[in-house]
Image (cartoon, helix red, strand yellow):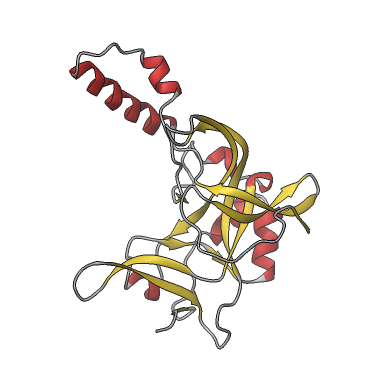
Length: 215
């Protein structure tokens, strides 16, 4: 594997910020950087542009809907759940898949006062923060408006799959958890095998496979 990220410093990753991913470049795997958030569906962007146009009309402003639609900001979709959707189907081949390395991930929890407090999870075991991978998809050279202030950009983007949670994550966030790959054969299959073969990997880790960091 070849690295294109240089001296990669450790740190947290947030939506629409760069993160390391492992992807194909021809027949070679490379460690590259991409921004977290695949393109949202055309319907979502159209609906958001329609709401924006309606607000302008309500204020008496002139509306060029095609222009509004072209520059409607899309900060990206961070998680992929419904892989049967026509929106995600073009991104499920091995060429579009990637691995997202991580040592810990958080889910939204609440403290005793009810305030937001992220809960951090890692793989269970004696090692403080063992490395694992999210099963991801990516898109290179995607052109869109991520933020109004920066305008049109062409960037590489990614997201990762989610599934129903296991016991540890479900106790904090009952809606979903990332699809996590820990075994070499799973990792290799995700990067090489047909979708019909690897779609069964969209499942939670077994109960007991995760621990709360510093719990």
